Image (cartoon, helix red, strand yellow):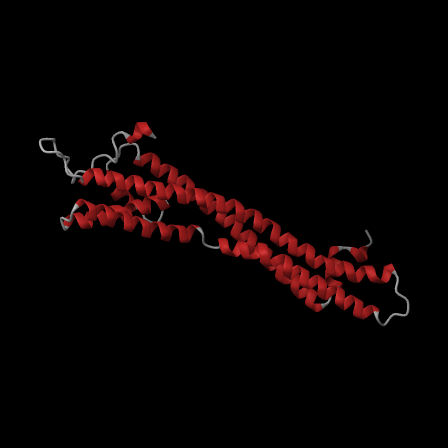
Length: 247
């Protein structure tokens, strides 16, 4: 390829507006890749920590021990662990007031739902940025292309004879903006779809755990038939005795 048609030569020979569009798209692309890598490792960490907590939860460890561990590792723990801690904290507070079982479970479920929303806000952070890059970048590149072509034709109007050799450099300079726009948009849309799928899976796991843990608390505080041995609600020894084999 002739040196005049290299990418660097085309960018340096473009108009100021096209150069500004190219610089903007490159900056957006760099920010997009930064978000992609950070989001990938954040979601992977959340998934692995959630696996570890679920395994520990269903292994039969006492709820009190799980709660103490969740408090001690609030920042480093999994999102699911923090959801559990919120529900357990509210349950213990309401139980001290000796409320009925329905109020206890409902209060704990509401606390877990609020914690669920907070965790999802953190996990979904910057996802909208990727969606914006994926949808806007091609149009920004197209704007640079249209402006570059318009600038090229204005320059050609002063020439007496126009040939392909005189038209090609200006058109090539303008088309670079579209190429850079696609370069920024394609990775962003692929990453957005990939992350959205993983986040939906995590959300389903969090919601399922919320309902399962609510059922466990319901059994802990449910009234027992007359004559049946009552379970000590204060001990909270096992999350669910049959759950280990069921899962």
